[in-house]
Image (cartoon, rainbow, N blue to C red; front, side):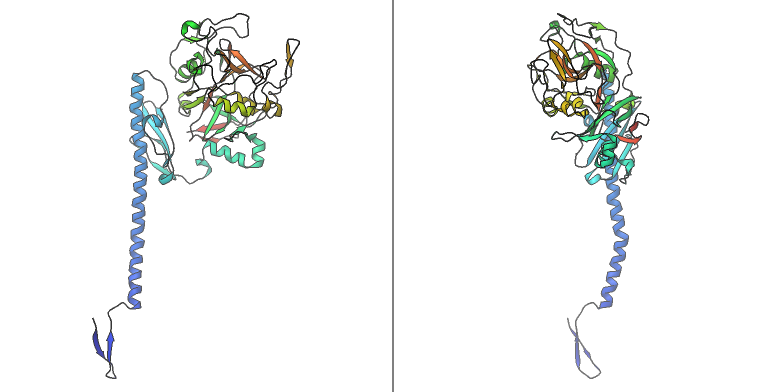
Length: 445
């Protein structure tokens, strides 16, 4: 619309409706004030909604875990309970999740990522799960992140004995005679083998006990009278996972012989279960149920003194399907044993990387030589102990680290040293220590 005004000169002037500059500035100022008041409230609402959703997830996991525990008690199942057992979490928004128990009360530790990045619930229960905001300082780093940082610093890498292996996975391992990989676990001295993906792999520093890998006879439905090298059917798996980890009452089986005897066969012999320090609740809450690879290999050269594959080749074969007829190729367990490749990678001796029996001789039907794999190898103990990997040419032989240092294929019935090995959950943290024997790493979930 248009209206008219007369100027002092009597001329008609036209004026259109609109805002003056002053009016526009006033509107802008008002809008700015509204934004200053409203935006934080909107942001806080979104943030609070996100926190509430994250806390609700932790409470739900805790509630479901307690129900799962009751079910397991009815079934007399002493196995640990993982988050994946009670709920399906979105990998995009949840970084890690673990459950521990204080009596019958489930405590959940949940770490967010994606839309929940920067949020964590530590030991939340079904009634109280307060989310905290992480700041990214060293106290929030996982153990694997901590060790990766040690590796990424060249001087620290060398000082601590860290090295990437030459596999396609490029695992970070502790190598050499005495690297800084000591850790307090289960109120005992354990050692870190290395970082595998987002998990640490540990091995007990000392031998737990001596035990047959298996000592069944054909009467128990296996192929030979010398026990089976199928880990999933072995007495050693039952001993480590049901008795040592699970705390169950079992019948223990192990033959008494500790060295080769002509014509010796298994007896399916029952023994008094060894008096050992079992896995306690704190350590149990840190252990990840893991897929253990059971792929085997034969000797690369079968003529005495024999030869193994390179350590890289063994690593691939352990994760393969070469086993004795119809034996299992994987197993889901809390407790396992080291792989032959773990032993090879722990040494800095170049010849060991090519053949785990390097230096062994067989001249005039006499074994001799100086094995080299024990050189600068912290996994060498000077005693025989089992690996988890079968000699796939046979139904009843398993590779073990022998007392002289090399890799041997031994009948399962013999009583050989046991060094349990575990993978830790991805959210475990190193809270103190430098990894030396006098200043061991301390772990916390």
